[in-house]
Length: 177
Image (cartoon, rainbow, N blue to C red):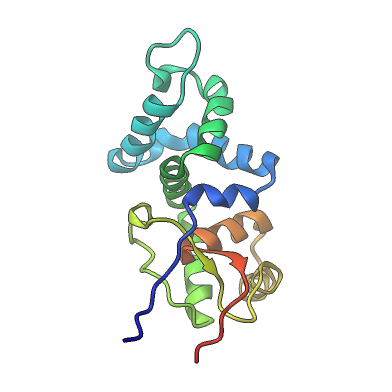
């Protein structure tokens, strides 16, 4: 019997691929825009903030200003996979146009991914392999070729690719027998 199993890396493994300044930018922009998200997207971030983020002088960490929440939220993001998933989900919703564009790009290249509206926080983490022949540079160039008039940050495109695909290029692809 030949059973196929899939290994996953926990969501916080993404920190190995993110520069510190970019991680702070993503978390800051997400925290600053939480109020415009629907309650069902905002509440999970607030719940995990109350659980993992302690801020001196605030009994309820979600009541602290974003500037005070940033550093301890970044620390929680590096340690707790569920914090990564929840923040990433909120970030993706806040960047809805980019999310749709990256989704279309990946589908056009034959990636098998969940529908754009799927709740990726329910996954156990990231699959550690990308399709053979794909890398950040090729995908970034393909995005620029497909959307030449957009002035999009390459890091945002790469992060959206990782989030939507549910994959980190951690290992080389294994050829199917």
